[in-house]
Amino acid sequence: MATYQCGACYFPYNEAEGLPDEGIPPGTPWADIPDDWVCPECGTPKSGFMLYQPE
Image: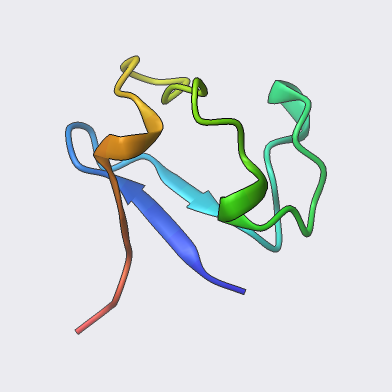
């Protein structure tokens, strides 16, 4: 499972953990997140997230 990170505030979305407080259960793939979803921290749209790849 992958982690995606907001390009504005660096909020992480981890597919394994989901976001239960946002109604997204653990194990939800990024592709299944609705396109109109926004970052719960700063409001950046889903398109503003990038795959997180630690160096």
